Image 1 (cartoon, helix red, strand yellow):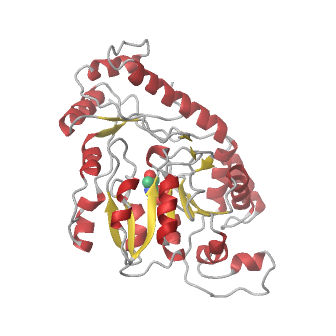
Image 2 (cartoon, protein in one colour):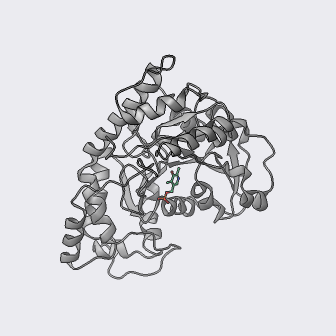
Length: 382
Ligand SMILES: *Cc1c(COP(=O)(O)O)cnc(C)c1O
């Protein structure tokens, strides 16, 4: 029986109150009072140029691909160790996905391999800040600028993470966040597109509102609204936005708690790598039993200097698949659910059918697919 789940979505207690308020306002379709509140919260707290709530990070990524005018045959560089949506958004526009390997010390993309992958067809680099830890953005932005490429940050896991005092999602030309229930801040299903390059702001709003200039109409900027571009229904309802607002009000408390749990793990694994002394906590007692047989590598805490991650995931990396499998099974027997993820995208059935097998092997990506495990980390953990 599982006594400690992998994740438990946190409810602050005010979600229903704000949903009731939205209902009382009598307008629960998108882009209403709570949506505006959420936008200005993010714009003020992080200095983002313009924010648009979406129904998911997947949608925000799809908006990014439309905004950058990605066409059939364009090439987009991204890691293979990521969720399918990072690639799917660009595949929907006919792009060829060019996969870059992960770093040897971290699942994030190895920025030193990017430049060799650029061709005249390359249009964009999509970075993924895995576990809320920053990619080497100075190097990546420099490569993009020298080669005339766009940078999209898949910051799905990276709300409230920083790279050298800059919030993640606010560094590339566009940033995409997720508020899925597995993320730090959540509204069930939700997301946000951040427009950092102001030239995209006006068109982003049109694509968001089904290809119409309805948002400008409601601000009184045009006297009627019509069909002016391609678009889709990317905006969430006020039911979702009001739920999210309850989370945003508690963002500091949520982050403080997650960071404390992350630090507890960190102290345990980093401080006692050799002795692995048993702590009084029952959960860690279970751990230490299992870990006596596990073969861990020591690189789970690596992240760039001067960056401050958001405690989204605490992961361990084993030397090989069989050790990880044994660990997960033993933890399950102890009632604790631990999970692995990202089957490398370059080895997926779909992408191999779509664009053929990857020419280069991606050894680090494949290693993380086989060896990384995520430990439970949620607000209500003791
Ligand atoms: C969660 C996640 C997504 C998808 O987010 P949704 O809001 O569920 O669409 C995309 N990319 C990464 C890296 C993620 O972790």
